[in-house]
Length: 363
Ligand SMILES: Cc1cc2nc3c(=O)[nH]c(=O)nc-3n(C[C@H](O)[C@H](O)[C@H](O)COP(=O)(O)OP(=O)(O)OC[C@H]3O[C@@H](n4cnc5c(N)ncnc54)[C@H](O)[C@@H]3O)c2cc1C
Image: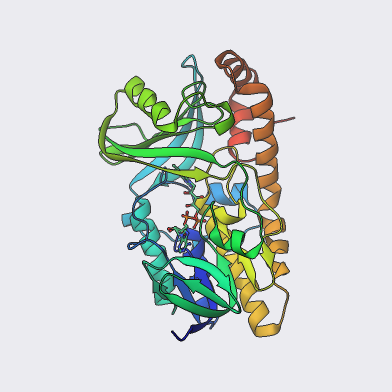
């Protein structure tokens, strides 16, 4: 079979891949994006919360032109969210003003993929990247020849494995489901034995909510679905549809995230806020940085390492403080409900608000 030829082969049509594909195509490059699922974004494996542009700018102040990147159509905003409520094991609640919205991740991802296609990228679904073979990249649908390969294929990145780049270590398992009912416009996070080392969540949508749990695998005494069943029973959720799970990188940003003719983006690069598990905004910011570096590489011969330099400047400062804060929480707060309760009480609302926004809580 003769190989399909392209400038940039993007593996994975999640937020990271579609953003790389969109901006690389806008720079005049020939882009092919392969996605192993038959429908982009389906099934949903996400809490479906997006912070507002103001909150993203506050967390990542060096990121530019956020309005253009996060120009989400109003039909994709399922519910405006005004606050995040942190609930201790004993039920004490701390409300932190925080703006954002819930979405439908399947439609959200499909929208981003359609922007990439409109910009000129080719999308091939039901096509899985398999391996590098000689100078070609082998997929389930045949070989592809590309000048640059982008691993936007999530925390278990096959691209990273094949190309000798690091993979996120010990990612956290997390499961999610949809619940019916009326919920306050508040994202609620429940801490303690209900979800050891992470949290259970309620993220309101109109007429329902996305509900789920994630946990640290090292602190777990039962399976993730068992944690979810207990959480759902405690909260009396009226569940609709099944439970879906995935892993969330939790170690902080990784390095290197580029090699000869290859780079990783989004979850595959560990670009997730360790304190809250959010990764969609970073997948998009990092995706655009990757596209700019690829265009510089292919048009002007600049090194691909400029992508990692840009990530260090824009993403790493807050991702690193989030990873440090998470390490402190793992050491001092998690593992016993009593300790979690005491730590949350001692930290108080102001310091926990800083932690949520990936800032160091002290002074
Ligand atoms: C339960 C859960 C809840 C979450 N809640 C939130 C939240 O509320 N807000 C938030 O911001 N973040 C949340 N996250 C994190 C967020 O989902 C990720 O950070 C985000 O999806 C990363 O985007 P990505 O494009 O890097 O990867 P993904 O969205 O995982 O996309 C990777 C794509 O690559 C495809 N793929 C994988 N392997 C191959 C292959 N070999 N060939 C071709 N295609 C392949 C996959 O099918 C997938 O479509 C949550 C994560 C989980 C697990």
